[in-house]
Amino acid sequence: MEQIKQKEKNLNPFETAVEKLYELFDNTVLRYSVLALMVTFLVYLPLSSSLFTQEIMTNMFFYVVVCLGLNIMIGFAGLLHLGYAAFFAVGAYVTGIMSATYGINFWLTLPFSMVAAIIAGLAIAAPTLKLRGDYLAIVTLGFGEIIRYTVRNVGITGGAIGLIGIERPVFFGIVLDKISHFYYMFFILSIIAIFISYRLHDSRLGRAWQYIREDEDAAAAMGINVVSTRLYAFIIGSCFGALAGSFFAAKMTAISPDSFMFIHSVMILLAVVLGGMGKIPGVVLGAIIVTLFPEVSRDIGQYRLIIFALVLLVLMLYRPQGLWPERQFISTKK
Amino acid sequence: MTFWEIFLQQLFNGLLIGSFYGLVAIGYSMVYGIIKLLNFAHADIYMSGAFVGLITLSLFANTFVGNAWLGIVLSLLISMLLVGMLGVLIQRVAYRPMLKAPRLSILITALAVSMLLYNTVMLLTQGQYKPFRTGLTHDSFFVGPLRLTETRVVLLVAAIALMIILHLFITRTMYGKAMRAISLDRDTCQLMGINVFQIVAITFFVGSALAAAAGIMAGVYYGTVHFYMGFLIGLKAFTSAVIGGIGIIPGAMLGGLLLGLLESFSTQIPFVGTVWKDVFSFVFLILFLLFRPTGILGRAESERM
Image (tube, rainbow over all chains, first blue to last red; front, side, top):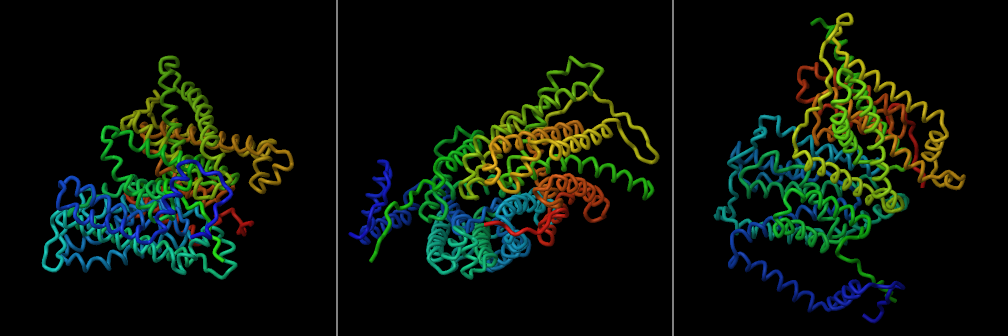
C-alpha cells in the first residue's frame, strides 16, 4: 500500500509501534493465519485446562457478547445507556420464568426473551430518543433500578430469592450441563456477535449511526430519520443483551435480583469505554481486561469499584479514544 | 381517620418530602441551565452532605446540650460551605476540561465522579445505616386534625426559606443575573466580559450547598443516613426538574413540591401503596417525557446549532 500517507502528527513510540503492527497486519495471509491460530487455541483450550479457567473464560465470552451489544448503542450510535444490566435481566427472567415455572424448552424461550427486550426498549427509548442524550442516560439508569425493584416485589419472578431450577438446554440430544459445553456455547455466541457487529458497522444502517453520532443535524438534513435510526440501535443492542441474559440464565440455572445490579451495567460500560467506543476489537479487548482484572488481583476486593471509577475518569480526561488506538494513517486512494 | 384528616396529613407529608426533592432538583436544574450537563454526581453530593452534616453534628454534640436546633443550624451552615466547595472541586477537575469534548465524554465523567463519591462513602461507613442523632424530641401536637411535630414544621419552613433566598439570589444579584445570561448564551457572555468559569463555579457551589442542606434535613427527618440514600432521591429530583421544566429554577421548586404531593397521595391508591410509590414516580417521569418534555413552565425551544 504505497498510497498511504502519514498524517502530519508526531507519534509517540507506543503509537509508532502500533502503526508498525497495523502495517504488518495489512498482509491478509498473516492476519487470517493469526486469527485462525487464536480460534484453534480457544477451541482446544477446554481440553487441557482446569474447570476454573474454563469458568473464567466462559464469563469472558459472556462479557464480549454484552459489551458488543452495548457498543452498538454507545459506540455506533452514541447513546449513553446506563441500565444495560436491566436488559439482560429481562432476557434472563423471561427464560427463567418460562423454563422453571412452565417447563418450556430453552430454545423456544429465546424469541420471547427478545420480544420482551424489544418491548422494554421501546417503552424506555421511544419517549427519550427525540430528546437530548442526557435524558436517555438518566432514564436508563432509573430503569435499571426499577426492573430490579420490580422483580424483587413481584411473585412470578420469585421475589428477592429469585428463580431456581431453570432447565438445562438440550442441543441435538446432548444436555448442556458441563462448563465446557457453556464455554463452547458462549464462544460461538461471541463469534456470532463479533460477526454481526462487523456487518452492522459496515452496513447502511451502521453508517447512518456513525453519521448521527458525529453530527445529528447534518445527518437529519441529509434525510436520515434520526429517531428511528437510533431506535434500531437501541432495539438491536437490547436484543443482544436479552439473548446473553437467556443463556446466562441457562448456565446458572438460578437467577436472583442481585445478579443484575447497577455495578454490572457499569462494568460493561467501563469495558466499552476502556477498549474504545465503536471499535470492535477494542471492545473485545476491554471485555477481556474487565473480566480478567478482578481475577488476577483478588486482594483489592472492596476498592475495586473505586478503582473502576478512577480508571473511567482518567480515561475520559486523558485518553477518551480508549486503549485500542485508531489508525493514524489516512488512505489517499486515487 | 376521616377523608379530610388523611388528606391534610398527606398534603403536609407531600409538601415536606417535595421540598427536599425541590432543593435537590434546583441543583440539577441550575447546572443543566448553565452548562447543559446532567450532573449525575448531584445525588451523591446530597448524600455526602448528609454525612458531612453527621460528622459536624457529632462535633457539636456536647457543646449545645439542651439547644439542639442551634447545633443543627451550625452544622448545616458548615456542611453547606464544605459540600459547596466539594461541588466546585468536582466541577474544576472533572467537568471544566470536558466542556469542549463530545457530550458522551462529560456524561461518562459525571458517572465516574458519582461512582467515586458513592463508593468512597460506602467504604468509609462499611455500607451501614448511621443514626443521625439530633437530640430533638418527638412530641407531637395537633393543629386542627393535623398531627405535627416541631421538627417537621421547622424543616418545612427552613426548606421554603432556602428556596426564597435562592430565588432572591438569582433575581436580585449580579451573580444571579450573570447565571441567567450564561444559560442563554455562553459565548456571548464571555465576549461581554463575564467571567464564565467563575460563574459556573458559583453555580456548582450554590447547587451543591442546597443539596447538602437537603441531605441534612433528610437526615433530621428520617433519623438515619446511609450511602444509598442519594440514588432514589436523585432520580426523583431529576423527575421534579423535568416536571417543572429543566433549566428553570422556580420550575424545579414547583416540580419538587408537585412530585412530593403526587407521591404522598399515590400511597393512598390501593394498588400503588407504599411498595410501588417509587415505580409510580418513575412511570410519571416517562409519561412526562413522552407528552410534555419541556415541563410545566418550559416553552418548546428548538436547539441552536
